[in-house]
Image (cartoon, rainbow, N blue to C red; front, side, top):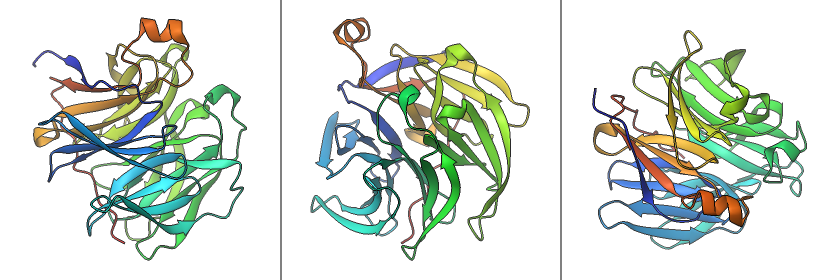
Length: 299
């Protein structure tokens, strides 16, 4: 097995970089800066990052089948026309619009956009609990709620055989699994897969590889964990030079590289001096693992 290498590839002080998605067609990395209210797109060939300002805090962005993107922003889903640099509202959730916001999201194998909410705030320990929920935006632009009483809706993905949905409510300190129906988009039979140890921090974003292993970003833990969801065993710990690790996705040639996002929000000058790459995006190579191409929203 080749040696694992961690490299800082997007040296920007994002406030909370999150929701990385590899765009295979263009060979670009799509992600958001939540507090910076920007959708960003990085080209590794030119090393240029383009960005589009959003009107509200933007939790996640996904590719759209017909072109452009869909994002979960504020308390609504929006369509993003990248060429025109424009945003159009698609659907609004009607709950506590001044108290909550969308956070992480991802498209399921049938083209539905799953995204969850949380109370406003940036310090997980101080958030008002149970204010969020997990939703899906259907291709016909209706919105379904799947889980209520969520404190900090975060990482999510599906098993390679599409029968299991993995989900993180960060303040539970664990990764859960549900039975999943691709036909209906319904989830059931919630159970715990992995509970984080104290030094591992909060579980944040995550992704799945072709073998069905989970890669879990640890906020305040400075690491990504590789978990076997069948046994609940931690198989590997990847350490990074910054504490606030927010999410990860596979990308690059054959989806063999792991891209990892981070945050600088809440760090004072002393902390930033100790971790000057906080808020940057990292690439980890030599893992001997391979990811699954992301799905696109069908609507």
